[in-house]
Amino acid sequence: MQNTDWLSKAACKGKTSLFFLVEKETARDRRAREEQAKKLCETCPVKMPCKQMGRDNKEQGVWGGENEEERYLAGYLNGASFARRRKWERRLGAPANASKTKSTSR
Image 1 (spheres, rainbow, N blue to C red):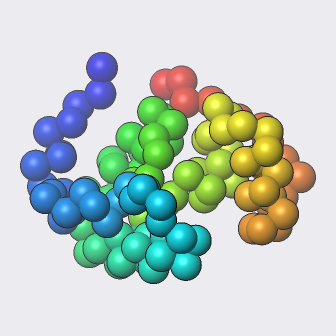
Image 2: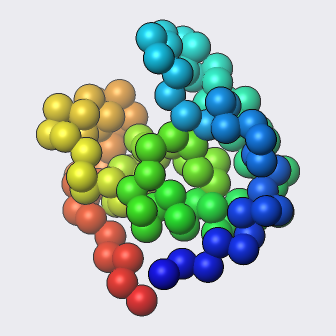
């Protein structure tokens, strides 16, 4: 079980609407929302444990300044659908080994 004591120190506390998908959100609106979320992450004292939690738990939304696409490209979202992975690879120019999952074992 992960230690989550750091959550009370998160800069995003009470601002979750910036970090998660909004119903019927356009791609443009999503990029703008995620940009705002990532700016807040840059000032956060607990960015690294947050990023690791997003990676370890295959979270959706922005965690520690990373969205799902960026976690996938870092090798952490093996549960993403094939169509979604291909879309991300085309859009973001994923390296050939991006489809390999990183081990999160300790």
